[in-house]
Structure formats: C-alpha cells, structure tokens
Length: 504
Image 1 (cartoon, rainbow, N blue to C red):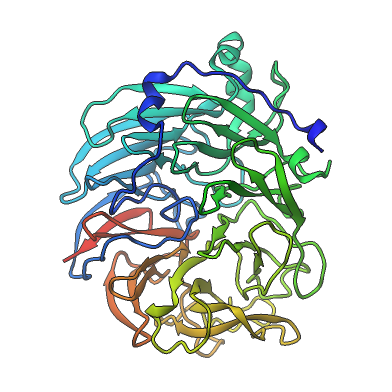
Image 2 (cartoon, rainbow, N blue to C red):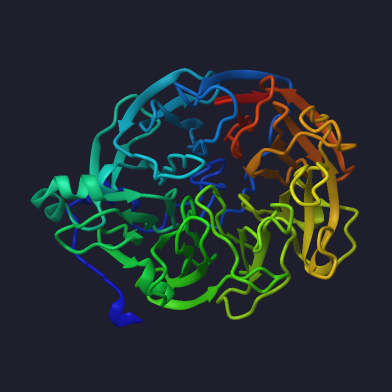
C-alpha cells in the first residue's frame, strides 16, 4: 500500500503568506472557520445566537440562479473574530468569487474572484474556503489555493500556494489549469495545516493522481492518491464535497473516497502529518450488507464526536430501499469497530449536541447527534413526514423504515410545519428540512435550521418546540444549505440563492 502512495515533498516559498499561521492558532470566540464550524464539523456555536426579530441584511449567493428548483450546494459562509462575514458567491454558470461583508450592516468590504470551477455533479458543489487567524484560503484553478491576507481589511495581499509546487506549475501552467481541480471544501487544523480533496482529469508532468492534499503551515506540500489510501484500484477520488475532518488532538485526518458517482467507497483514517494510512473501511449498508452507495450529489462530510467516534452519511443499497434516507455510519476513532448507525445520512453532516441541552434525555451518553430526518413522500414507503431529530449514538431501537435493522435511538424529533402541496395524496406531508449542516447553540439550548418552506426555525431542545421562526423567502425546492452563527450572534441562513442575516 505504501509503495503505491504517490507523495511529493518540497518547500513552497510562501513564508510571507504562511508565517502568520505557523504555530498554534489561538481559539477565537465566535469564528466559523470552515464547513460546519470547525475541523471536527461539530457545528457548535461558541456564542449565543440572537433572537429572530428581523432580517438585518441580505446578499445573493448566486448572481444568476436557475429558474425553478435549485440543484446547487452553495458554500458555507465563514465568520472572523472581528465579525467579517466571508460569503462564497456563484457568479456564472461555473464561476465564483468570495465577498467580505461587515457583519453588523452587510456593507461590502471587498470582493475577490477565484478561478475555482466546481466539479461535474448532479447538484453543483459549492466553493469551500477556510479561515486561519488572519488569512483566508480559497480554492482556485489548477488545484492551487488563493490566499487573501487580512480578511477584515478593505485591502490585503493576494498570493497563491500549490500543493504540488509552484515550480511545477510554472513549468507547464496549462496542464495543471486543465487537469487539476479541487473537489472538497478546505479544512484547517489548529496548527495552520490545510487539507482538501482534488481531482486529476488528465495527464500532468509529475503524474498527479486524484486524492488528498496537505499544505503544512511551514509550506510543505504533500499528497496521496485515493487509490493508494483505499488499497483498492477501483477507487478513483476523494468523495465530492467531502471536507476532511480531524481528530480532536489533530493527529488523524478522516476522509471518504469512492469509485464513481453512484459507486462504492471507503472511509479512511490517515496520520495527519505524514498521510500514512492508519486504517480504512469499506462502507456497507447496515440493513442489506451490500456496499453503501456514494453519490456526487451529496455534500456529507465526516463528523468527529467528543469521544473521537466518527460519523459519515451515505446512500442505501439497494436504492431507494430506505426511502432515499441513506444511513449515518458510525465508527470508533481508528475505524476498527463499526457502531450503531443512524437512520438518515444522505447529504447531511451530523451536528453535535451536549446531552445536558436536552433535559428530557435520560440516557448515559455524554453527547447526542442532531441530523436531518426527512422521509420523502412517494419514494418507496416514504410518507412525507419530514423531521429533524436528536439521536443517542449509543442506544438502539428498530429502524422506522426497516424495523429489522437496529439504529440510533430517537431522543426527540420535530416534524416540519408547512404542508407540502406537491403531495396532496400523502396525509400530513410537509416541506423538507433543507440543511446539510445545522447550527447548535448551547447557550439557548437550541438548534437552528431552515426549511424548503422558506423559513428559518429555532428548535428549542428544552420544550421540543419550534420556538422562533422568520421568513427568508417564499420557499423553493433546493439542494441542502448550511446554517451559521456569527461572532455577534447573528444567524445566517441561505434560501432561494440569498444569504440572510437574522437577529434582534
């Protein structure tokens, strides 16, 4: 396996850019640095969210949105400690930029185009930047990263870093521009090391293969192929939109790799410094025992729990035998033991909920999981009773769709409230919950999520009620979107291709 791993090490002359990220990045209250908040993808806010009294400001995240349903995964907004909101914006059919807005007013600070192009997929993947202490890293063309200094300032230097080396790029720019493409959001650890997946679509002079890239805080670039880290020649790439996740001590990186759209795949654990394989596991459907299904339409990413357990969502096989719900697969820290699965995993990143936030919970787990829990009308036995759920990862019950399969026990669930006019023959059918990651606010003991009915909701975990609601749009069918809490407690939700800032 190791002999098959393609690893290239060198020094990138980026001292000016990377110096600020050398050493430990101090925890910054209120920052939202990457997809689902942090490198573990917990989506837990470090500040209390504001009440839903009004929409402060709005900004489009797509300058040319499609008519009708929106099959686009818009990238997650990011928040700096100084309350600058970084917004990924789709500017054309397959072109993007990032904008920086003042969190309090929405005023535009600056904007920067990027050469990033989304990989081909049924649901267009979003642009996934990441923040360091005072640097913004943005996916760019040719598999490189655009680095913008001082994101809180109207001015800042722009430069680029290359995981395969600037000299290699300079020797044949066209080859890399045409053939290398980032296909996941960026993930940054507390030391300033950056991880992401990339595709290789054709020949490059140094023989790149699709896989996982690492750029260290000191400028060292490393990569490993998806084939090598899976140990399977049929595996061709890191799963589309699968932002890598890190263990809490930063020593292990987790990422999913797959064979193709609607193919099979593995979850892989790697040493986060060397990218040597710690373990890999071929993912299977917990009901049928067949290979779980991977799809490029999903934006699911691994979540790492406080105890080190790892969670990752997949589609079922045979499809749609589980009502197109998929499964949330569950492993221990080194992937050597498979644990209780969740009953929904398709296109969802589980959020972490401290057990003390749910007073009705009487179990022994220290933390619970929040997931989407849709049950799509008209798909297999789906009844349209679309819910969100708090699950106990260590307790079991019979699966609500396939009772012969044991799944995580429901602690509390909440049914959507808006009838779905598209399914008049399904009694009680409601509009879908529309999130790929929900925000957890431990200060108000609530979860914040939006729905395809165009409304943003606060789910009060003490009373199990939807205690607050605000209308963002008239409602539209769309690919699932992230929810974010800013450093001043403003809540950010995306609906109908518009980002709304909500607060008191």
